[in-house]
Amino acid sequence: MSDIAAHNTAPDDATPQPAAALGATLGRRSIVLVGIMGAGKSSVGRRLAARLGVPFVDADTEIEKAAGMTISEIFAQHGEPYFRAGEARVIARLLDSGPQVLATGGGAFMNAETRATVRAKGISIWLRATLDVLSRRIKRRNDRPLLKGADPMETLRRLMDERYPVYAEADLTVESREVPHEAIVDEVIESLRRHLQAHPPVEGASP
Image (cartoon, rainbow, N blue to C red; front, side, top):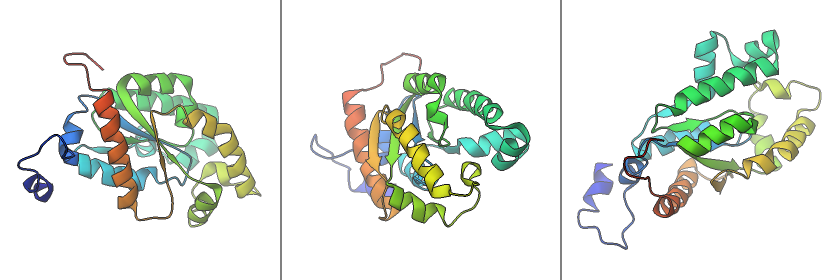
């Protein structure tokens, strides 16, 4: 960050803010990454948080810590409704402690209460990916509880049909595709910069 700052010692109105300075304008708002499994929320999120100078938090990791078991174990032992209820509680708690970059699970944004909380306390960014991109990424992993059936690609296609119209309610959308992660982070930061210029935090307001 020091190198970036050094090149912006005499900024003018046409010079973009360094990403760390942009992070400082969030106030207590969090950046909330939404999207389907394999969209790159964690990979992009870690890099984005480092660039903005705020913590990175993975909601699934926090859920596992709270439950004392893995996501797959929660699904197997208690079922999806139990998991979703706990997920909503954890995300609500995390959003009280911003600013941060928060990567959410693929189903989290489907919860209407969670969407309302994100809207009130964060800026949501949908990392949108095509089925082709997702299928290549997901084939490398076997830890997706919702894809344990006989035809995971058909399940993924169905989930996309259900979820993409809801993900589209996010404040911003950035295409997740097969390019270096830093290129996606650059696009997220530019979209975020434009959004923050149009929607600055209200001085003295609570999130």
